[in-house]
Length: 359
Ligand SMILES: NC(=O)c1ccc[n+]([C@@H]2O[C@H](COP(=O)([O-])OP(=O)(O)OC[C@H]3O[C@@H](n4cnc5c(N)ncnc54)[C@H](O)[C@@H]3O)[C@@H](O)[C@H]2O)c1
Ligand SMILES: [Zn+2]
Image (cartoon, rainbow, N blue to C red; front, side, top):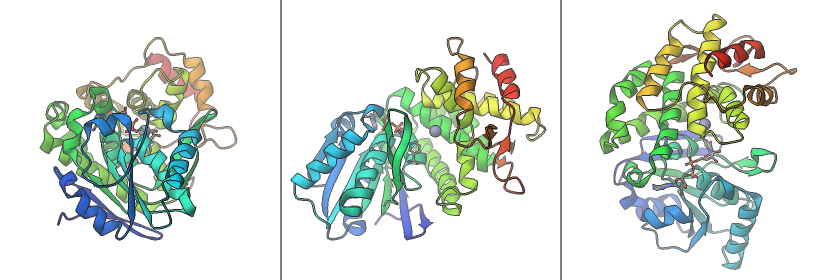
């Protein structure tokens, strides 16, 4: 049988994470092992259902592809469908899809009959190396993303990088941005490998994609394991995201998440250098690797810096109205974890000046 790459330890047990080309062929066996005796239901979006073959004999519950489906309405609809189909406490859910499917199906699993087990089969690069690991589930509301949710650790994660062959280029790009973030946080060698392997990865070399998911998922798993409920160093995973989220809001969500994170990583690293926190050259190194992945490193001219800076002042990491960011110390190492905590206060004027220069 396929061996897991790693197991994420959490408060209630462990979650094995399988990452291997062809892993989908073992899915029925793995579901029998990790959801023994369970009546299975598969949850997917309609696009994934059309392109990813899921070898599990079970009823399928579909929803329309896209972030627009990560809502309480879809949560209610899927839950009602399971009830009508007679799924009881002995059910086990299998989420096959990207981060939207994992978050939505995960929230259904967390709440259905007060919680049923969930197995995640991520099919986007972002979901394989990031969203499927850590047990966060939830939906968006009109006021913002991920505002309603729960922690619910999956019983297993099964990633088959071969499913990425049908993924649109821009979705692959989002995954690369988060992969660069993971390397920045924790692994300078992996950062160098990413830069050297960019062409193979962009060309979807399947072995390179498998190697990327394995290393990047391991970085995420180690951080989550050390801090399951986000009291401390899990904040590092927000690298690039304080500025990134602000730019997404400032662009009225016209900027893609991965593009916003790429720009955010560079802007935050420049701010960290200006504050004497990051080694000089950190931002330039980030710029170089992100450009290799055809990701933007400057703010597109049509984005309003005013709206972006306003959005930053509402960031949930702010304390006493002061913007807080996690900052790199250098490539492969984050700053923080002592004294003041894991985040650093930063003046919005500094961020504004750097945004102006990068506009
Ligand atoms: N829970 C977490 O810790 C966590 C972490 C990061 C992001 N997220 C969430 O993840 C979501 C984004 O995830 P995403 O980028 O995977 O988006 P997604 O799930 O919407 O997938 C992107 C698009 O790709 C399609 N797709 C998926 N797999 C495919 C395949 N193999 N071939 C062809 N098309 C495919 C989907 O149908 C969709 O249209 C956001 O809602 C974000 O909040 C959660
Ligand atoms: Zn992100």
